[in-house]
Length: 502
Image (cartoon, rainbow, N blue to C red; front, side):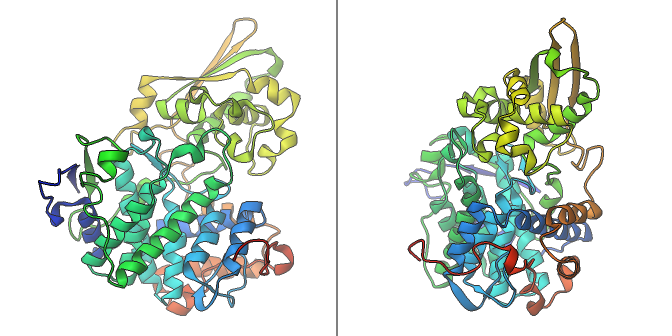
């Protein structure tokens, strides 16, 4: 690995193409670095993980809406849509739209946190959709996904978007474009232009994750998927892109990020160096914002030491800057304390999440967010006693460059009315690679079985798991079947409708 310096160049000072970040990304995407068994195994884990959360959310309104839109774009020789029969195919950008929304809806797949935050598994839907439409092999798909993760994680390590109130799809979109470039075996030049187009069109604001959080939170990465696929398609036809997209005098760093004096050091693998970034990412055991994962585990542990919750006077969570200001009381969002808030908002309220986890000792992707659960009197009472404070030490741990030293949890002090205190802390979730019970293949399959129980048949379960576990050896026709089918009698929005424009 090396660190590539990125800065703004005035128009009178030319930035050589070979020194531009987009070109460096394209070189990574176009190389032929070997892929180890550990990386291959993790890609398989994440394909299974994505499918599990997608099927669990199949009939939720945003997912049904996205699927209904995809159904209006059938295409012979196209791509599959989660839940639909494999024989029905759709244009790849619309399949990626439907599948990306399904994967993201429950906020239950993988994560990577550093200078910014991300869900690198969002790269899989567009890369898989293009692989199916372009009849690529499992080996090609594997290489594309590895590139998507590598680019995404390394951008997140170096360039902070949320500081400037930009949504994190601005890193996802170029990563997906690069991954598609690898999948298709495109040249460095074509990938370079596609990455630049992807960056240019994917900068949006963080209002999608602020205030009254709507279903757009689930649609955002799916929108990124469409943008990435379209960017690659355009440049394959000979079109160019705004350049240099990162370093230009009027480009994203100068006017959307750190400004004309802004500088970033982006870690990148050397030419033909193995891409290992996916091994630094981690999935979720609980369907909630990642910074809440360790705190949910901690709440379950602390519950065993509390005999009467009405005796609690206050709960103080000492945590990182990011947790405090994004999902804590530091955000200043009254919606985070509203019993009638949307699921998306409750998912971004550590006060709500910790209160429910402390009362229940567990977390469920449906029951824990149910309106009757959020509005329960004992929940509301405890919820309003929870507050967060930033602790510089936890902020430092959050930003640690060494993945073995990163911590995303916090220290919790429960203060009782009689003056007694109960304190405990947890740095990483149990399922984290450095946690008490790191997720392995059996855990991913167990999660898949739990989330798809009663939705798919045993034969369908076995068929999909077998295909996924044989990823590197899949022929193109098998990649086209790398989809989980639900009986149409159990699936809403499984036929074309006339509700919208399409």
